[in-house]
Length: 381
Image 1 (cartoon, one colour):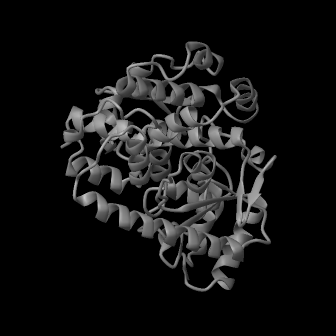
Image 2: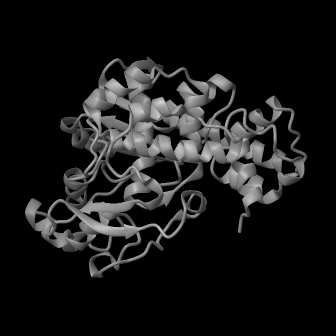
């Protein structure tokens, strides 16, 4: 179990220019293994070298070699796959875009566990069928009912495996009836093409990254320290026009998404660096009157029998305690509706009502009732 010193060391090594106060003896096997497993090793090594922090651990050379081979393999795989779907109008988001806008600027990269591709809703099924019929070395589901269910209720189609790597075709950025949707059409405005990759404009990239962190934490109760480090690194490395971000937020998503994520980033950075990441003016610019007491947050979800939002409960732990736990399932439960809480709030409702949902869209529930319907397929992105 990681102690406070180990957690502080991990965050310090993976937050840009924040590792000059850590002790070399704190960079243990356990710390390096955690950073390696989350794909952040290259970031940590470049950051440490910049701040004259020596990493003498014997495991690091082996970890470094594996990381470099994996990254090269991923890039080759993505270039090969994307080249074959070039006739479709798509935009990349999350992993490769994060490296393009942030980590390449400081001479490093973050490993990706899958490649997320966003297309317009009208093109999603066509692209999925094209991949199935025209691209070799692909594994994906043949279950038409399952595909129809994904299209209607979820934000992406079932995962695709191409050789040694995973892909998700997204047709929107949120699931059906999520209370904080983001209008994905703005991801296709002012895109930047580089080879086979198509990047959204910086503002939409940043907002979509914040929304990704938000949906993991707020809806799924899944906490990934590397994701909040990514947000902090974007802010530290990139020059951000906050007025422009505010205008985009008004167009595409609830301000509460940004308020939530920036407040969490502020908490983590202050824990590591001892100083604020952002001025209160910036956070207030993107602030909301909704659920501002984040340390005593009341989780809510849409529930068919409720009047809008349905009360779930309050956290029994602080944010920093949850950050290294992964999927958390120990909030205080209050009633029978939330007894089965374990996965995420929106999805819990979907599981509870899947038979009814299937009837509504005319699919056979029995044909895929034993299938796992994950939020994210494959390895961590």
